[in-house]
Amino acid sequence: MNKCEKTDFTLVPSSKVKPPMIKECPVNLECKVKRKILLGSNRLFLAEVVCLHVDKAILDEKGGVNLGKATPINV
Image 1 (cartoon, rainbow, N blue to C red):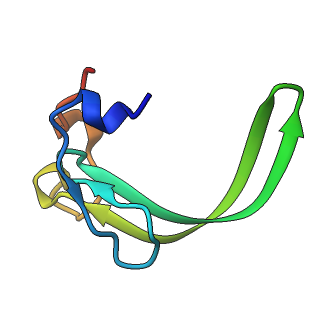
Image 2 (cartoon, rainbow, N blue to C red; image 1 turned 180 degrees about the vertical axis):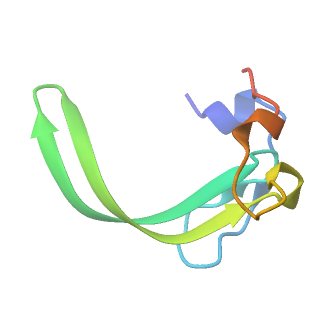
């Protein structure tokens, strides 16, 4: 199932990686997968964060992220 097709999310281009970001998310991490580890029927992805995007509306007075200002996304 394509989860993005089941939501009203707006996909926007990332700056460093191919997969898009979700405009409605207050924090987006762009990551490059470094390693995949098979764990039974699941995979563990180890990745390097190459870019961070934060909505200025959730920053505190010191420029830190205040997740208390973010609105949860319920799908």
